[in-house]
Amino acid sequence: QKEVEQNSGPLSVPEGAIASLNCTYSDRVSQSFFWYRQYSGKSPELIMSIYSNGDKEDGRFTAQLNKASQYVSLLIRDSQPSDSATYLCAENTGGFKTIFGAGTRLFVKA
Amino acid sequence: NAGVTQTPKFQVLKTGQSMTLQCAQDMNHNSMYWYRQDPGMGLRLIYYSASEGTTDKGEVPNGYNVSRLNKREFSLRLESAAPSQTSVYFCASSGYQADRRSNYGYTFGSGTRLTVV
Image (cartoon, rainbow over all chains, first blue to last red; front, side):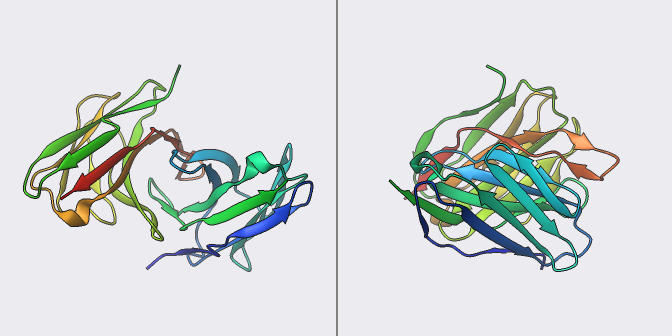
């Protein structure tokens, strides 16, 4: 059973701090990884994709991928209360199927 | 606005009733998906359609059927609803990256909150 594991949280950080969200996956052949943000009662929204080992930056967001250790992380710099949401990690295992983790709830305190 | 449109947004069914969830995308994506989301279990794939004319089972297909009506539309049908099908249902669409053998990230619809009593 291919799995994506995330700590359910909640992860609580003060406004302006760096929030670090982590995810591990079980399928060694996975090539594509995604981070989604989901506000309460809303649908998931894609915020980052990463395909190669290393870091990928987009504004305040940095995704990190380490295929040897099978983990992917998301850093949010200068966290804002509007970043409070559930963050879903997802992997594409080849082809058309994407597997999602259960998500980590992030709470940014003003 | 371009995107994925789902209807209805809310529905209450009695056990044994049937219904169809509708989904349409105007992003010219080939691939479309139906997921359900339950508390603590994340998103689970019910069915997907890699391209017009094809459909395939996902992780939890039992009790559901799908139809890819054309490139834009992908519907999900519950033939005889059961309380275990109480969930939030999301439709999504995506393009496909042949060089990576992977879809791109998904665009999701706004969801259907279904309660079966």
